Image 1 (tube, rainbow, N blue to C red):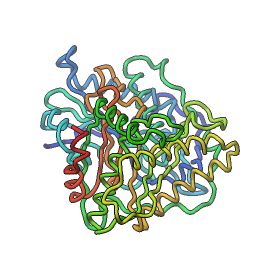
Image 2: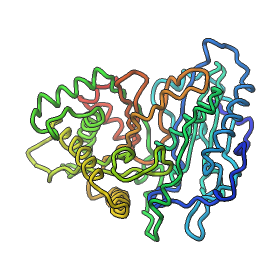
Image 3: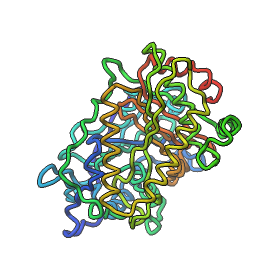
Image 4: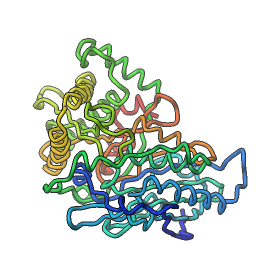
Length: 437
């Protein structure tokens, strides 16, 4: 599939940022994030109600609404500065806005496994953060009239909550409702100021050892998740936290973790202890006074660890995995809700990220890392021509599992990136085959 860039431009805020907002310091949680770009891609079929829309007019409308949106999300139009303490120079240099034409049909990308090399072309971005745009948007137009809108943002300024808030505001403005856009807050850096600390030594991108990574989609329908919840409830009536029903994320994470732990055992010839990691959005889960719609990074890494391997067990029971994932989520809610001191809270969050990086890099245990992007409304992003038919993350080029709502209510898509040999075994796992489509 041939992709040709037609033009690139910098889109600046429609109103200059006031001088008193020109310097935005990173919070202590921003400081610890990877300096690369994380992203999401939205696929839209041609507007059936308005076929043959002039793409140039559509692009112009997107550009104009983006410019208006940047007046309230002004740090995103700035540049990252590594001096006198890392900060964002809100200089209005703009975000990169790219238009590319794709020689093909959008339906070719909606089925089967994503081509990671093609995704990189559909979403090109700088390799160096310093001096480059913090946000890169590429609108890919297809012969059929469909669109693939790829957005990448540096993790230094945003988590998925922030990214979703920004895209939703942009789409709202594109529909002509700029007055209904979300009012973001950029006060996290004053609440949690950055301190001199050792930035985690994140593992190198794209490969594990010398093996290239591949990405696949595993669809868990609402019906399949209901069956998993029933299975967990029947097998472990009194063992889930507070005897409550496990969540969608808990049962899907448990099933995938069970399969990956089994694969790790097969590859190493023994059962190693494993650790399940998961991103945990802290907004609305803490008792600290945090402004609504806070932009930046406000999440922790939570984890659940298996007991020492038991030689007689060839595979952990599903109920045991559900207990681990449910307990880690339940414990995190209690732990962070109980914190009333900002410095203690900040220390807990930063330690969780540092521990994650250290353990993943050590190779002593089997790490299974999840990022839950559920309940962020990504399938509701409507620029004026309907909702997307597919949404997924753009791979970080690291071994990872992203959980996302899919277009059918109650379901979850698991976008898994791992080595090719592990992917083959994962697709052959009986439980994965039984509960995915």
